[in-house]
Length: 500
Ligand code: ZN
Image 1: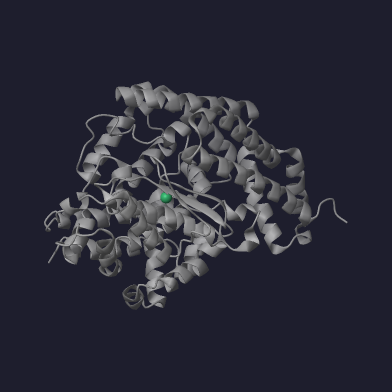
Image 2 (image 1 turned 45 degrees about the vertical axis):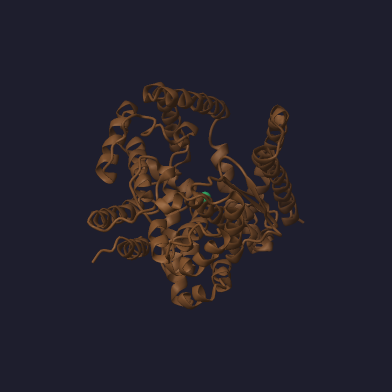
């Protein structure tokens, strides 16, 4: 009889999962229904639970257990062995950093977020710059501790969010996207831009909600395992596969926002609701890479939610829910309005065509920081120059420029590429799906069950037990290839902008 059994490992993982379910539920409640004055008590409770799960995951007993199983893999099932490898990677991320440095780093990121808020109010990057410089110094030091033979320092950060992804691969992928996109944008400039005035017509919140939730459920989102609430910033929070909740915000003169927002969050929810039960109470039910999660929300929002074949059949439903609001608008006028694309300075307001350019700019700047040691003081000028070059618009101040995202203030470098990868993965999945399913017939039938089943079988069931690249390879027969995204966008927008 060995020192530990697989049951011991699973018991610790279950305890961590239970603690995290509590945190998730309390976090959801804080943003939806919690009374205002409860905040300090809630913060105390959340920090207590976070401390408990952190202690379990970083404790010497857990380390001892992992080391034991690494020496005796035969005592574990295949899943058990996979869990040990997964947990070791997470353990080392924390354990390799000296505690004193970790505490100091936490303090600096907290001060940096404060400085970021002040810098935004003053529209002045220089207020934030000294804190950002300190974060970067720490991050570079951590990279040297984490590094296990990467080609460049920035590769180490990329790997933490997207296992196996390298600068070499991303340079090639983003290079293709950039080239293809500038070509398409140049063509669209000569096209016929649609008018999207009709999208600001009044649509009551209840009608928006009823319509959007009907669409979300047609795509498979289950209200027996989910619910919808109002928040300022929309999100999805999952406790487990039987409880994945979504939120949204409303504007009665911009119904597109809630329709696409609900489809997006329901896409995240669909993933959570359909993870295989064999991963219950393991990190494989919750450690999905952000890129693959985002590929599923974007599949709903961008692939389905901007598909002409889909809207051709669902536009009558929108008309039915909105009385006479769109009685004078034919389908073609509606669809072209729905698809208007225009460069913007703000990433979160970007349409799906220009969105990847915002990410490529951040990727190139992060690479310059970690691989070329660019000075922090030079970042705003670099930022502005790239916006002028790639999007044809230049920020007039730092608030609409380099100060718009909170990520760097929290030390999150290497995270941005995942947002663009989500778009590329979604298009590649759609292409693979279209080779196996008769999509035109499915859209025409308005029964989207085959699409739901395909996604469940090829993507959702795996949870975090496979990397995004493994899932992509299994589903589409190849690793990431940006040509599917470019081809799809070119086809869609050439038609909408009536290019000859
Ligand atoms: Zn999302």
